[in-house]
Image 1 (cartoon, rainbow, N blue to C red):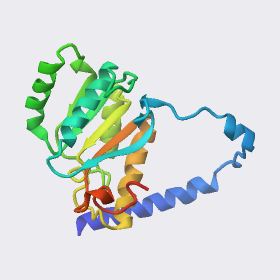
Image 2 (tube, rainbow, N blue to C red; image 1 turned 90 degrees about the vertical axis):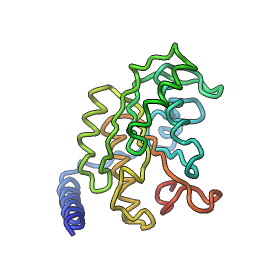
Image 3 (tube, rainbow, N blue to C red; image 1 turned 60 degrees about the vertical axis):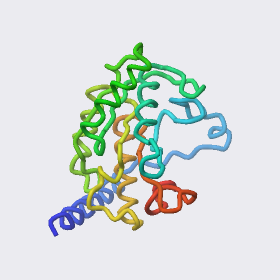
Image 4 (cartoon, helix red, strand yellow; image 1 turned 120 degrees about the vertical axis):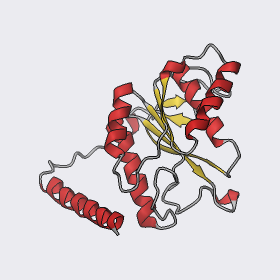
Length: 213
């Protein structure tokens, strides 16, 4: 299929780029144990809950309120409001509402009816489904996040943003995680992937364990 051809082409291009990059790599920097021990600890966006950088997953069964929780978390971060008693450090947020779409409007109105003092301008939205599997929309999303200065990017939901992927296979899930990691690295931000849990909620998010590994 065309999508498979694109996937192979992209993987081959990445492999070729890795070889070229590796050939030009400078000598590796080696640190002592004392240097590593003295390095600053990871900082928090929401203390004890969300780090400032990297990729995290917010998951649960359908209809449990993941999007409502993600939306409230986003506005808390944007306004610097404590979230469930945890201190939040304010920053702009980009919320990719790939699944909720137009239904986000009533949710936002409901939120501000409860907390009218919060700064709605600090949360920006993308309401169209994206391709973060093949990666067609990875660069546009990076540029959009940089444009609004977002340091937290919420992808809701991961499945809706990775159409065509078999999330049960290590290859496809590994590629998704790699793209999310690239998004986080290129924007110097935290990426929050909103995802469904599996049939057995106690076993974590749906799909291959590469997501939580």
